[in-house]
Length: 406
Image (cartoon, helix red, strand yellow):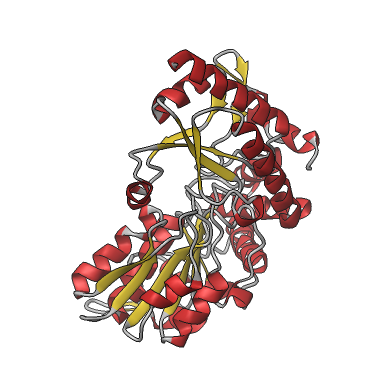
């Protein structure tokens, strides 16, 4: 497992909550930030803060170099062909909306199909609902197994020659399920559809190779992988991005502006109108450096050990129900559950009184909650800075809550 030296690099984990040392088990919502990332953002503001691409002065050049340097780090991080295929956005939600509102609106026609799954986050449902409604297309859902997994047979049952877009999460933010996105992409392409991957819950934990997956678009957020909030990425194959129209218009994304018509800059800047999220990009670049120094494979192995240990400990508690596959090698580093006769929000409140942070609610996945036949669930999510001691305190908190409400 990763050492406690990792934990020491995250200043917030030295804080107390309600007089107790913080046990942070909500990294699927947002991760904590290491000192290296905090320092990188501070250093940018202290030494080279300026707008990018516009000035010829030294600070402007330094800022531009830092911003575009971060783009190249992202390119290498996911093994894209070129930096022009990396679009900086506000996050996964913005990235998926960009694909839907540009590529989707341009290419989906009446009678076409868009295929997603029941486990999708709202950010990978609602944009496609809007495209389907606007274009009079059909939105179809891939069925899940009893354990909450996607089989290729289930994909084949939904994807047809009428399908234009298949959009699936790499890893579920509720079930933890890791989906076979490479094989799903092969099925989509065999029917002439494009493959969109929501990698919000995968990019922080798994090594991603977009060329190996052969996805057409991939979206993820910085704030779940040790970077600041407000910065995200859309990867797209150049040929597709070149053919797409921007959905935000204004400064910096233009080539020429006339009185009645305008033309756009080349990739990636035609999709980055206005002053971009410069400090966020710098922070994302620093986060990538940090994660790669530790190693994504090491992080994934660490999380698998934590999940296996947590499942074993949680099953000591009578009346607990766990959702998703129980094999830690087939899931991301989170566990969603319910404790019999204890509402998830009450459980989260009791745990918070003891300094333990978890998530409770529908997790922006209401269709999946309906599939689970639950109105809400509790979720504990782990990251590179968590330890078995965190899990021990979490399990003791669960036992305390059960006793309190029992």
